[in-house]
Image (cartoon, rainbow, N blue to C red; front, side, top):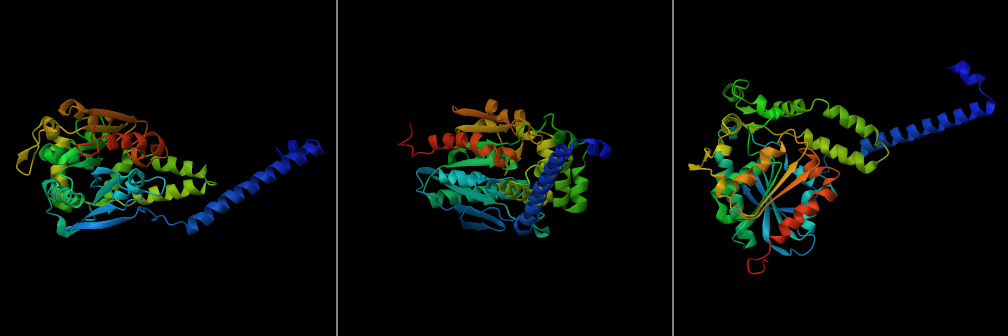
Length: 370
């Protein structure tokens, strides 16, 4: 190779050397810049949309986001995140925050922060999250806003909770938005296959560990897409010169690494009743002593699914539109995965405006509604 290089005319050799030198200098700038950025970047600079803590229920907090402009839509929105991860995926960084966007649209936004449970909370049941914490948070939103009804937006497992709540307490729900929310747990996903009775002994896990540890939860989700982390690292290398992209990457990694344990008794019920028996889909799930009949959902329903979701395949969520008796039902399909549907680079342009427009059109006072 070198002998061929030296055999080239001197002008050509000089041009190649200069090109190589420029490329090396460019790489040095990129890698030097990323090194400096990583040194000063704060991977925990997340959840920056201003909010006030308006209610505390044990370790569960209710946040109300401060209005960026005048709140122009009377019906408040209560966001219900997944129980398995921290809520700030929905408020990742400025410009990549669904909450920031909705607040900017004049919507009165509240959110449940489930907190981080400890061993002392191990007896908390699946039912208590819905008929206890979620119900009390909804009551407080109604009291603070002065509205009889609220809109619910549930993400992932929070969407499952929201659907159950709407079936049990429908008179309080003005609108229901489900984002990547499992309803039919007997789907063709890997997660559904892994959790079946002949493959997964949930009693052994809970009786031995008391809870599903955060590290084990994180490992199981990473096993769904084993190459995801590698692909993300490669993608980051291609964006070394983009400071904003690197900061977004660090924020997402912070969220991915910030799993929380799933309390034992709640986890036992969730796996057995939903994944193994599919009782929610069959109308046989009992919560708070009442049978959950999804056909009782009559509020306007928006179902948002991600076409490449390996945790909640689209049909697992879309099936609710066939069961609910709502007269107003809409489905939005987003070309993304389970996390990018709410925090991906394309979500602010391709999804959030549709979601906000749907809500705004249904969030006026009853006398003002079209």
